[in-house]
Image (cartoon, rainbow, N blue to C red):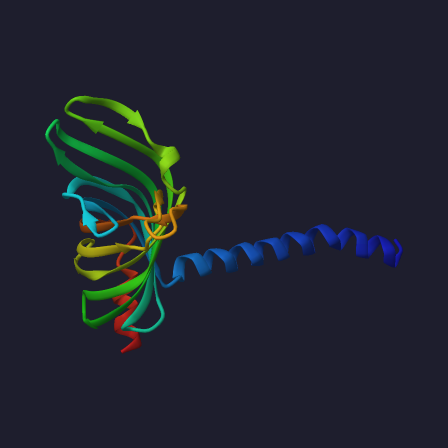
Length: 224
């Protein structure tokens, strides 16, 4: 048997070993990764502010998944993927009119944990508009998505406290201007002007549940 035959016969074994080693390494990284994953349910109290006028609060729901990764024993990052009901409510002579804006939101917060299990976070929230509908006491449900921008930006900040696998969160999400477009006549020039206006403001209260074992706290204890 030639040397070429020997080399050829060794290739399948070498490839299997390499694949096994890479798989073992990948599994080890996943098992020992310094992050937690979980799910959360959120109650929203949301309003819309346009040109200095703020609507009444409308209650809605948000929910989805989250992952948190810690950089040190006191610093980390939390990212979420949420179905998020925003909007506002207005009262008129004809009754209440609700504007329901439903988003796919991605908040990413950098947090600081001064005391074990107590976190304070701050970061951006990006949101993609899924549906926009208006409904009133004397108004049939109307699709108003064409009047709103498909993308929304906000700044989120708040605090969270965890006990075991459960956690509670209170957060304020301050939207940036630009969720809708206003067209009006400039009183000085008499010209028609179009500009982006309006912002979403949301107060959130959430209950979360951690799906994996509490690696976060056990690893932090090892770092101390």
